[in-house]
Length: 416
Ligand SMILES: Cc1cc2nc3c(=O)[nH]c(=O)nc-3n(C[C@H](O)[C@H](O)[C@H](O)COP(=O)(O)OP(=O)(O)OC[C@H]3O[C@@H](n4cnc5c(N)ncnc54)[C@H](O)[C@@H]3O)c2cc1C
Image 1 (cartoon, rainbow, N blue to C red):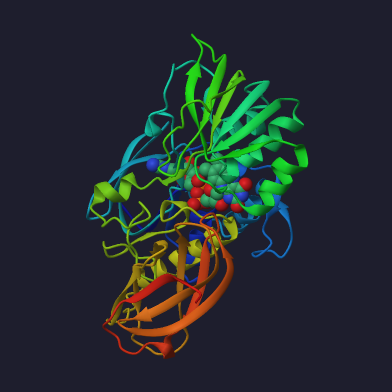
Image 2: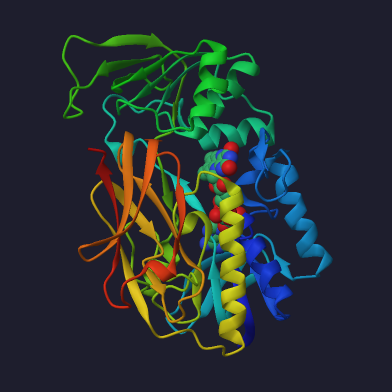
């Protein structure tokens, strides 16, 4: 069986950034395995602008952004194989994949898993009503429209106010469809504020907060949907039904890390539904790293790329046999916090800072984000507004830590 130093699974933004940074650290024996026909991942279909403000200090479309990384991969002549779908990875890093050339097994010395995320489906939320054609995820509709030039419908309703749904509300409108509204189960939007303004308000598309779809009507083809208001327990309120005659229902009801390969390999799962990692992005399996949306769903690709670079550098260090520090402490998501990445941070040296990424579990105003160890509050940062749709990144100076045993807890605390 062929042995390769570093195998990268997934040639999206995270995987390409990992490959480039590992190469720049001196690793030459690299292979990127990508299941689709092209490198770049989901950004191939994100033709709107707004990418790259952090990474390149300019505003790019998704394809412009990804081509900068494709160029970097090609300049370095990093090998990649397209239409190569990884089916499994054994605990000792044997990667099994298929491609039009056949089925293969390769032994990896180190692995970066960068397989992105997938969209939650109608079945996952037990949507009531019929199952006609015309109910489709927003990302799939985006793929049809932006890559195949096919508009999936003319009269559209959108369930879920995640960013992809908001962007598709604008995109379908610009292509001549009528978007009748967006329903959101929660009393707040799950998308970025700028997308609410630019994709809904600028096009007079109503947003129904605290509403959900309570009926899907149509034999064979979608004819109409009904939405209802929900109460504080998120249960539909009888008598509040509104009917919309539509041919398409787009679902933008959440993204889930595509972590099956790492799960089956036995990597410990984290709160994000991705794997648990330390601050080098190493999973609980030595030499196996995870980054990008497979680790936790990001709002900006710039942060995905930064994570990919960290994974590439860490994989290079592992391959060179560089020792990590041995003093690790855990991180904990306290009250009001959905998750914290990484799950463990190395505090061997007291220089620099610990980078913590997290999301709050509900929108809040005038609150403190508190960083503590045991009973000791290390730092409190006032937030005038904080929302779950925006990932927070905070660098906690290591010199504030009181010891190298107790976990670092991140909590949301009300301002007195
Ligand atoms: C529909 C959709 C629209 C989005 N729109 C935006 C946006 O407008 N702006 C924004 O900043 N972010 C957007 N995002 C978030 C976006 O996913 C990230 O910003 C970033 O592109 C994720 O990079 P990634 O490399 O982690 O994942 P991806 O770009 O998804 O790349 C993962 C790659 O892994 C490959 N892969 C998966 N499984 C296997 C396997 N078993 N074997 C081989 N290859 C595999 C996939 O084919 C894919 O190319 C969107 C996400 C989705 C799902």
